Amino acid sequence: MASKRILKELKDLQKDPPTSCSPVAEDMFHWQATIMGPPDSPYAGGVFLVSIHFPPDYPFEPPKVAFRTKVFHPNINSNGSICLDILKEQRSPALAISKVIVKQS
Image (cartoon, rainbow, N blue to C red; front, side, top):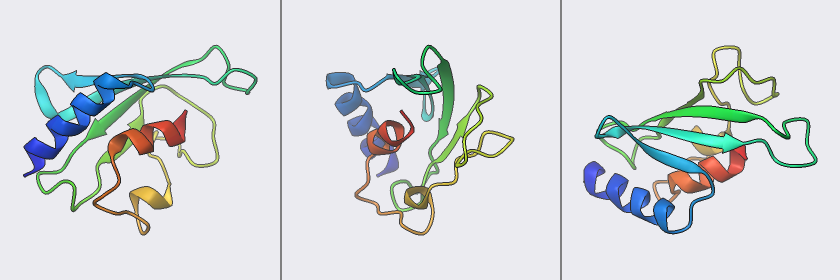
């Protein structure tokens, strides 16, 4: 089930991409996204790499999402891990990874 859901989410992202996002070396369970810093923000002009690891039981377990580019933000710890309720206690299997990526943009 995880592979089918991940493939669907990738196809949806490619139709209406908020950012560049693709599997790493044909591994559907490991993606890399590139997020551009929003204009008129302290992050304007920045290019941020994000790593996304999907567990085998996705979407019932949340993906691990972490910034690979150093960024200073109250919801991102020093190793790049993202502290968002939608990745933890407020997580829903209906939540698509595109919503998580957009939340970071």
